[in-house]
Image (tube, rainbow, N blue to C red):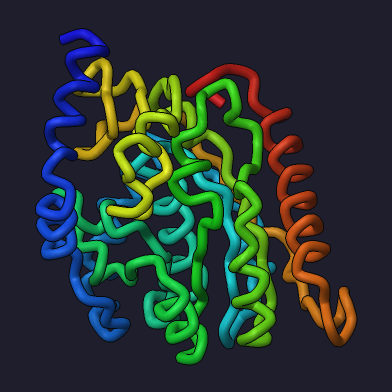
Length: 292
């Protein structure tokens, strides 16, 4: 099937608009922080560690820099399309270091929650990405993992893999200030080598009004297993065995660093700047694609 045919099929699927939106929404579990199940995490850890250690050769650094207790906002760059191994790799390292009893709530897109994955994301602590859920989790003393770049960053072309691209989304700064919690930048490399990402398809997404229907600004095109040419990545894909490296950086106390009334844009530029510097450093360590 050619690219044109795949795009036509994707348009046909999306043509039902509101019906598809309702169908996807029905598959997304209501946000319930108490659905997180430490026993479920204990059961899954051994098998997931085998996958992370041998398939992705995971290298997670700096977990000890994360405050040992209390609420914290982890701000990460995002790679790998709708199947993002960097999130799994970091979540495993977090649980191993702090224990499964400490709450970690990654915020994920509704469509990811709706994917037919072999793991129960809600029991693992994942909740739908929204300001309300983020505030609630921080108020309950959790570590919250946010990816401001969202679908825009995770589907960036492969030749932009070494770029932190939040597209100007600074809501994470406002969240940290409102909840008075530190920001810990979390930088990952390798995820964008798990497929060949060709285009975000933002023009097609805009024409189909995907932002209005699903909060999606892209209809990505990639080469991936098992689909070959993959339009939309709506059913996920099997990631190639790229080496995944993740590093947690030093916490940033916004009031201590930027004064009593921090400027949101200044904080945004600082956080993305230090993350880009770290991503450049981690990328510079890599010698070969996939191998690392």
